[in-house]
Image (cartoon, rainbow, N blue to C red; front, side):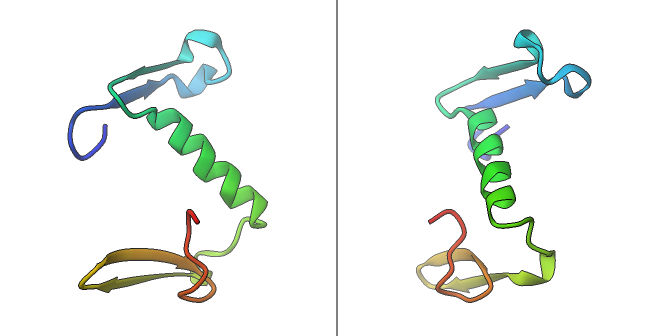
Length: 74
């Protein structure tokens, strides 16, 4: 479920590849977001957790890989 409570996805992990294993509701496709994040992680070579950082400032919060300019999700 997203923070706004407007979207949700339920996944039957035992059979995730089956057509009916993923059910989503709401304006956001949370399953697509999860699979995009997993794909990005794999394409980056499955980086170790120690390579990630987080910057929080007056403009917001930003996750990064290796250096603050290497924003995650960019």
